Image (cartoon, rainbow, N blue to C red; front, side):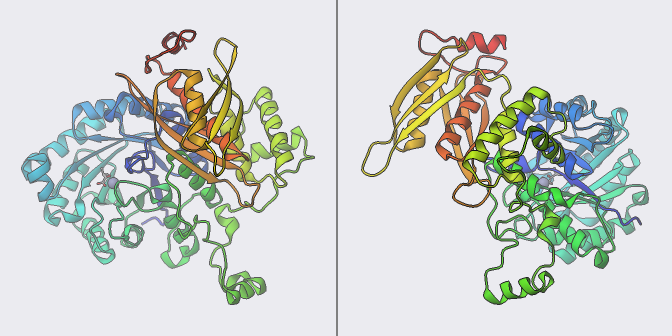
Amino acid sequence: MSDRIYIFDTTLRDGEQSPRATLDAEAKLEIAHQLARLGVDVIEAGFPAASPGDLEAVKSIAEHVGTANGPTITGLARTTRGDIDKCWQAVKPAVRPRIHTFIATSDVHLKYKLQMSRSQVLNRTGEMVTYARGYCADVEFSAEDASRTDPVFLHEVLAAAIEAGATTLNIPDTVGYAQPAELAEMVQRVIENVSGMDRCILSVHCHDDLGLAVANTMAGLQAGARQVECTINGIGERAGNAALEEIVMALHTRGEWYGLHSELDTTQLTRISHLVAARTGISVPPNKAIIGANAFSHEAGIHQDGVLKHSATYEIMRPETVGLTQSRLVLGKHSGRHALRKRLEEIGYVELTDDQTDRAFARFKQLADKKKTVTEADLEALIADEFQQPEALFVLHGVHVSCGSPSIPTASVSITLPNGECETRASTGSGPVDAIFSAVNQIVRVEAELLEYVVHAVSGGVDALGEVTVRIRGCGENARTLSGHGADTDILVASAKAYVAAINKLSRAPTPVCSVSGSDLNVETVAVSS
Ligand code: KIV
Ligand code: ZN
């Protein structure tokens, strides 16, 4: 049996099922590019049958990220022809497409959810895996709620899937019920009893309801599974999925003990963690293993003394191994355009045009004037902020805020409109951010509901760059949820940028999504023609 572990990332599918974590297509693509840089073997990019938007997002990832050197791209499909058709439509542009189809196998799911008998589930599995194989040579089958399924029936279903041509078999602990030794036993029994298993990869997919997702995953690997399904920061349905960074670092740090390895570039872990936290708005607790803010901090005097004498006294991993380079000065205020371009290439922005490099350089200079040390994380936030809206309809021109105690928070905002005119409006609000958003609303005349507002510091110190994510919902028939991001050393300016970015996305929707009031701006026309 090989000692290589395949990493199947489902941040964009199961992770996106986290309460509040809706990602728009643009954010999904951005995360997918970064997952490819990390070197994951498979990206589960979404659930194409869930909505036309999800199908398009998966397709775009298949086209742009599923390249010759890129990962396998898959989408989830129930065992129905309709779902499998849509999944294939979405993943087929990838160089290595995979269809991932699933059906529940536990009695409780069969009786109450599916209202199907065991023999119906068995037949459906064979038929639909065969159907998927008609499209694609790489088919994964998952027996949902495997850990609560009668083992004899589970083995029958898995054997039927193999017989029909499945190449990867996944046994999820869907409700996070299993204990490590139990999960290992389930894996062993499948390997011993399911005929044809030697031709397939066995995969585990663990949820964290009892806080055991990573422990269960590692037990599954020890018992012979060779693919793990996991998410960045452990986000996912309910209590989440097994955290990718913890599994990968367990394999990296204790690889000899396990006799196993993955081929990921661990130095990308911090960056992808920040990106997922920023785009989903789900922040990482400071004590989170590997990527929490305190994961490499030593507080107790005895520990500090030990680490200063030799890092191995209290550190089992070096911070650099997970890409924690925030304290490192990336560029200074005297660095030139060439140095910036080189540094941007090093952190993955290889395709910037001259014009984009010029814009990035101008932003960098502004930042370097305000902030003594410009770190890699700052640079990331700045670039993501600069390029998220290449053709913005509304361009933020200026923000002025007056607030404090006692006073009524008041904001004045200037925005350049699609017709080139600059409009300024002032508004009060319950707080400075509310006042800014209300002034923006008066100018853009787009009705939108603010669903979420999240701010976090990109790096430490009083001059830290603040990164704001807002999530808004448009109104009317075509109501969609969209997010916007903004980064600035002033978090109120970052808030205005994030809100205007989200409004721009809403206004650029292919079909009219907003009711328009006011006389001089026809957003419906702009939206349809863009
Ligand atoms: O948790 C689960 O069972 C799943 C499957 C659909 C793979 O996410
Ligand atoms: Zn799941």
